[in-house]
Length: 134
Ligand code: NI
Image (cartoon, rainbow, N blue to C red; front, top):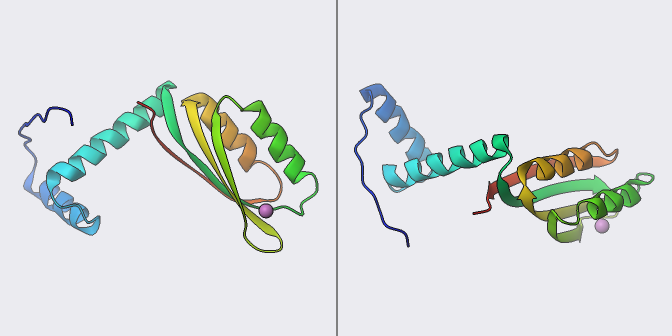
């Protein structure tokens, strides 16, 4: 584990009270844990906007009966073979599939992959979850 650094933070009373309610609702054990996560999230967001290295997953559901959807899906995935590190496919029911695509690479490439998949006709839902790759 890396070295722990302690620092003091000055906040308005109303702000720290609101923060305490927030961290309680999120089941954090203390302010440090909550603040740590907030800082990490902000740094990932910064990386996202500046195009740094990210890792994450695209989670999507689709109707595999939609004409050409599966072919288009495969074409796009092959175009992004340097970004996609693993794919997991689940047949949900007669019509629907769930696909989890693990990604690692440049934030802009990950975003492009996600946008191209989302635009396909027959995709019911797509969400992208990212974290820092470092
Ligand atoms: Ni399937």
